[in-house]
Image 1: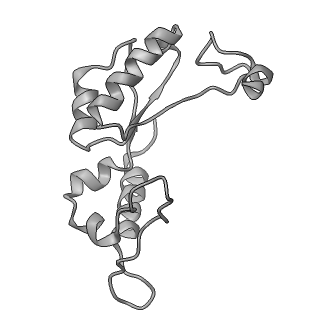
Image 2: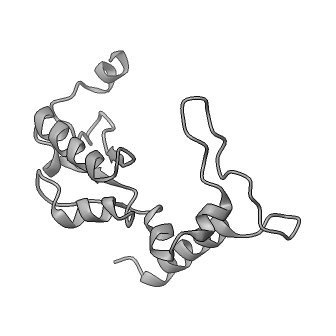
Length: 140
């Protein structure tokens, strides 16, 4: 079991870094990431600092769930900004249609901004058993 204290310290450090001061001693209004021509402008430090603490923490969390369909509490967490995304494991992804349906529901709940990830190394760990091998994935 992972001790809770180091996790709390890590989350707090990340939050303080996300809304902390720049090297000149003042609050920085520079974007946290550089926008590209394909994306909207990045959230500024001031915008992050203005977020409620629960939302700032939520931007750092990726959750998981059991089963093939995202439960209401996961959809609610995405909708309310209490989670940034979901990681899928083998029990969530028995076939492509199930993954497609779950991903659609997750993205809809998050307004299209959900991080949906999975552990698909292509070797012994293959969450998407129906996907090609590592060599086949590279070709795809």
